[in-house]
Image 1 (cartoon, one colour):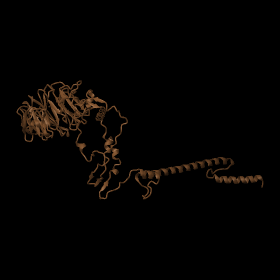
Image 2 (cartoon, rainbow, N blue to C red; image 1 turned 30 degrees about the vertical axis):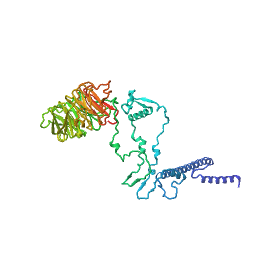
Image 3 (cartoon, rainbow, N blue to C red; image 1 turned 45 degrees about the horizontal axis):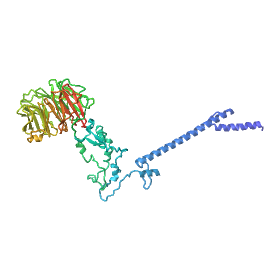
Image 4 (cartoon, rainbow, N blue to C red; image 1 turned 90 degrees about the horizontal axis):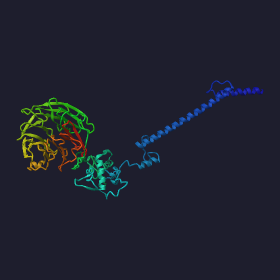
Length: 567
C-alpha cells in the first residue's frame, strides 16, 4: 500500500471520528475547511454552559443563606418556630445568640414567697431604680453671680407679672431666672405625651399597695418615685389648678371681633357663651340672632335667625345648653331649640297684661325663667312647659334680677332702693334690706358660688356684699366702687369670681374691670389706644379665657385673658 493510499485511509478515519463528536452541534460536515468553525462554536457553547451552571449554584447558595438568616431572626424574635424546644441546649445555636440572651432582661420573675399569694417585686416590674428616677440633669454651666444679683421686678412694667405677692419688689437672680422659665412654660405649654419625667413615675407601682381582686401584693422595703397614678386618684380630673390673679395690670390681648364675619346693623344688646366655650350668641335691635364659633382667629358664623316682629332686647342660653330664650319689648317671647333648630312663639302669659318682657333671668338649674312685670311683679315661668307657675310682688318697681344658691333663691332690686331675697321653694321673701347709697337699683349679679353679690345703682355706684353677712343683718358693703358716674346697667362676675365687670351704656368707654378681693380697678383696661365705644353687654367664657363686649356700634369685641388657660 502506497503512502497516498495510507493517507487517504487515515483521513477518512479522522473525518468519521470528527463527525461523531460534533453530531449534536452541526449535523452537516463534508469538507476539511468546515472543521475549524465548528470547533470554535463548540468552545463557546461549553463556556456559556459552565457560566450558567456557576450562576445557578451561586443563586441557590445565596437563597439558602437568606432563608437561614430569616429563620434565625424569627427564632430570635418569636422563639423556636421551626425546631422543637430542647432543654440544656442553646436556643440560637451559636455563641453570639447565647451572649445576646444573657444580656437581655429576664423573661420571668421568681416567686420568692411561701404563701399562696403571688408577690411581685418592684425590681422585676421596674428596672429603673429610685436613684435613676430622682436623678436630675445637671446644668452644663452655672453662673455664680446669679445668687449675688438682685432684680427689681416692680421698676420695669413688663416684669411685674413675675410677682407672686402684691408687695414683692426685689428678688434674687436665680429666682428671677426660675420665674422667667416658669412664665415661658406657662405661655408655651408643651405636649403632655412628651413629658418623660411624669410618665416614668407611673411605670413603677407604689409601695405597700395591693389589689384584692387580683391577689397581687407589693413586697415591702422597696421605695419608688413619688407620683400620682391616674388609675388610683381622680384629683387631676376634678380639681383644677388655681392661681391667684394679681391686681394692678391685667394681661390681655385683643383678638379679631367675634362677629367680624357679619357685624350687626344695630346696637348689640346680648352676648353670651355656650357652656362648651366655643359657641357665642349675639343679638340686638336689628332683629337677628347670630351664632359664631369662637376660635380667636376667624370666628366663623354658624347660623343667623331673623325675628320679624321682635327687636331683641335680651337673649340667653338655658344653662343646660338646649334652648335660647329671646325677648324684647313685646308681650310674648320666643324659644329657639338648638337640637331641633326650631323657633317657638310663647305668650302672652295667661292672666297677665304685661306689654314688655324684655328683662329676664334664667335659673342655674334651667328650671325657671323669671321675667320682670308691671308694678313690681316678678313672673315665674317654667322653662319646660313655658307656663306661668307663680308671681312675686315687690313694694316698688322691679328693675333687676339675679339667681343664687343654685336657683333656689332669687335676688331682686328696683325703684325703692332695697334688695330682696326670695325663697323660690316657698315663694316668700326671706330678707329685705336697703342697698347703701342707692336710690334706684338697676343691676344685680351674684358670684358663681353665691358667696358675693354686687348691686349697681342709677348714680354709678356699685356695692359688693358678702351674702351671708347681708342676710345676717350687716348693711355695710365689703367695698363701694365709684369708678362710674352714670347709671350702671350691667354687672358680671367671671367664672372664678376674681374679676367683676361693671358697665354703663350712657358713657363712652364706660366699662371697668375690678379685681376681687382687693377691689382695685385694673388700670390698663379699657385700653387707651382702642375705644370700646358705648358698651351695652358683656360676658366671660366658661373657662375665663375669653371676654366679649357688645357695643352700640354693632360690634362684638373679643379679648383673650392670658391668666386663664381654657376658653
